[in-house]
Structure formats: C-alpha cells, structure tokens
Image 1 (cartoon, one colour):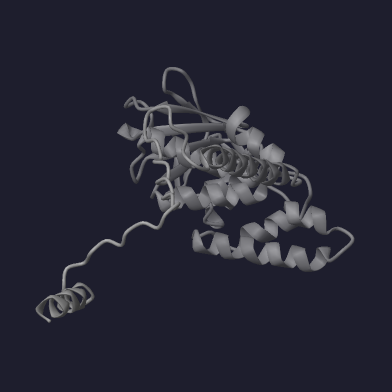
Image 2 (image 1 turned 180 degrees about the vertical axis):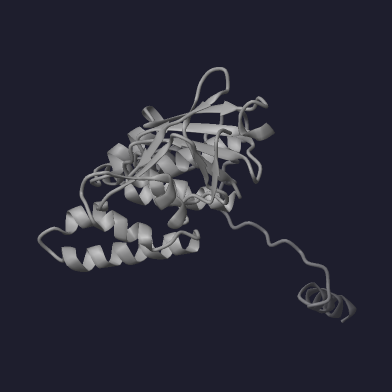
Length: 277
C-alpha cells in the first residue's frame, strides 16, 4: 500500500505545477536539430545587404548630381544668365582702384570705379566696397558711359546704404583726381551718393532710358512697361533727393544731353560743387 501510494505520490509530484521539472525522455529514433549557424563578425565577414547599401548610395549621389546639373543648365540657358555669369566671375566690365592718400578726398578713402555697367555690376560694387572697407563719407568716384539701367539703380542703392558720397572723375596713379564723365545708367549710380560732389570739368549726361524689360516687351505691352519703369525711376530719384526735372531732361532726347553745372545743381543732382577732391 505504501509502495503503491509512494509511486502514485511521486508521479503526482512530478506532474505538479510547483514540483521540479523533469526533462522528457527522447523517443527512440529522434535526432535533435542542429543549432543555427552563428553570424561571423570578423574583419572578413560580409554584412547582409552591404553591397546593395553602397550601390544605393552611389545611385542616390548620381541622381543628385544630375538634378543639380539640369538646374544649372536651365539657369544658364536663361536669356541673361550667361552674360551675368561672365560679368561676375570671368571678365567684369568694371574695374576699381582704391586711393587712400591725403591728396584725394580730403583724407577720405576714394574708390575709383570705371568702365561699362554690366549685368552683375551691383554685386561687383558691393564686394569692392567690402574689400576696401569704406566708411560713411568715403567717396565712390565714377567714370562710365553707362550700361545696364537696373544695375545702375542697384549700385546707387548700395552706395546710399553704406552712407557713401559720389563724384565724377578718374584717379591717376599718384592719387590725383581728374575730371571725367558719367552718362546714362551711371547717373543713377551717382544719384545714390549721400553727398554728390560736382567736380570742376566733370560732366553728367542723360538721355531717354530703356530697360531690358522694355526691350523684351516690344510688340506686347511696351507702353505699360515704359510707364512702370518711369514710375520706378521717378520714385528712386525722389528718395535720393533728386528733382523730377532730371526725368524730364532724360525723356527729351535719345542722344546724350550733357548737363551744365548750373542745371545739375538746380536738379539737385549735384549737392556740393567743388574745385577738386
């Protein structure tokens, strides 16, 4: 009785939830499955997807290059993009000389700018002003036959933003300022001066202006575009303190009209007549 109960009790303890687990005996003919292979982490090991990762990065980088190239091609294929790029990076149409000796400008620095006003002239001038470390009251000396109307206006805005003065003339290697001329779009750059010096013998020339937009508008709505440009120019000259009389003088002729010193002063284009800088 005790033996039977003990065997029964032992079996009950073995299958009890709180009793010790006993590993089941393997069935005859059963072969356990081998363990899964370990992934090697050595130097020569190849990670899954490694080749595809590098290939995907190369494809992505190639797509970026192609998209940038297409964008650059579209930018340079615009009507004025190539000339702008050339004027800014390859062969600027303007040149400059910094004069710092006391013989010019009454002790002020003078940045002598000469040449035709190209499609990137405003950016070029801003960089030259920064390089020259011009301070308010320093002089931008202009000598130019004109060029791009919009760039001339932007040059004037930059000159005014830095509190610089303007004059018309050229500077020789000795720092002496000689008489010069400033015509067409150059007059708008000159108008940006906080003080506008009228050098004895120098000349300002005006004529009927045309913008790039006006040229493209021919045959479409040239009259409306001319009115828009005229309003913008008039607003600019008014902000610079120049009389609207200069706009009237511009509209009278296609040829250059050279203003005499009295006219330039009456129009408030020249604020300070001087014999020499």
